[in-house]
Image: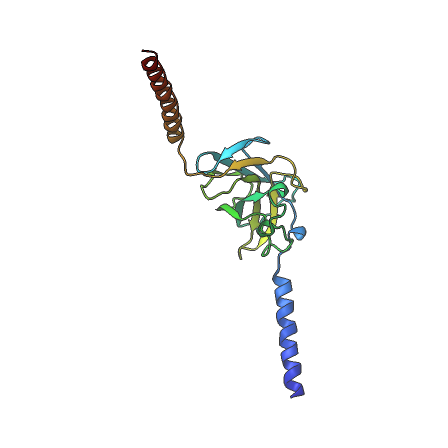
Length: 201
């Protein structure tokens, strides 16, 4: 019985060790990519309408050949801290498996050594209203994050842009509604004048 308990305890410890060792911590990743995005700081984009062009390249200070294990670049749209406040479902966690900062995948693109990569993306209708930045993770052959780059600083306070969520309404409908309202007001005013003249007679 004691031997069985010791065996079970050993298995449990091994599983815990494997779980911890497989965790990728954001704080452990080197920032080797220089990432830029087309929106200017403070620019307002509309979900389902406006495009974003993302560009990335390896920092030139990286030693030659150090990117030999780089296989893919995973680009994501990420919440800025102002859009995470009091929202636990968007909370940042150092463990990337638990991190909710970058919930919106833009795309995963094969990495080409020594070349500048880019991708054109239209903000999807499913993106909620908020303040964002772009982050790109470097993946190895096992699709594990091994490096990153982002369009903002370490505190995630610079080069941020806003997205207005998709409302489902079309601009032409708003124009039609405005015209109808104006017509209704004009009609009421006309009827009022007609009734007033009749009353005078």
